[in-house]
Image (cartoon, rainbow, N blue to C red; front, side, top):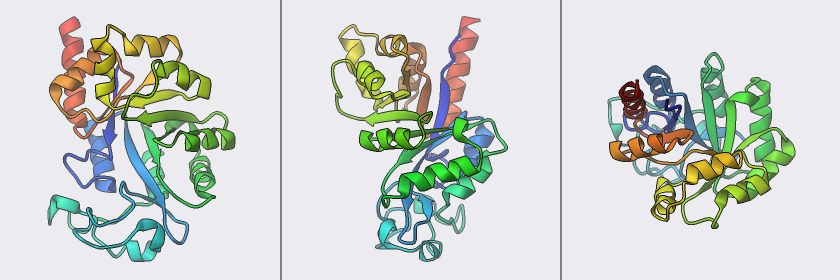
Length: 253
């Protein structure tokens, strides 16, 4: 039985504007087990969901940095990216809006920590705590110091160490030493270990560390990751990943 689950990367971002409530709602409808999102702090200390530190790509050319722009101004821009009129006017969402959307569900949220003030991490955790969703949230970051700081704020916080280049020879031991919950490697890192005859997922699981690779969008890669037994596949196509896992399990039945 393959128990791999699926996180919709920035929501169902292959089908709707990334990091939008529309993409998150679509991920829920598709049956994803949760979502991955990115979070910044605005100039007036609001927590908003966006990937880049500026808004140019998703607003079709508006020159503004999130940390230098107040929330009310950001809400005047259309974050529909490449989608034109299909989704109409897409507002940049707040963390509170996303938590409100997911609180009635059993799905979880992978919050990638980006940038903010010295109170940024405290504000994120306080919002999650306010909604009573500590168990539904995992914090990930390429900046592993942020993960350690979040653990200091909330010792029971679930954390995932993001990386794209080779971390160290045995990244599962690094994660265990740092008291992280999971490794979030780019999927090619698993291939690199497999080519050397090392079962990355088994080694990590033996160390008590989950494996949640990103961003797998090709069917062959999704299938291979599921067969290897990763915990979550992070993908722009949650419906495809769910179908592949279902097919693999039906083939085993």
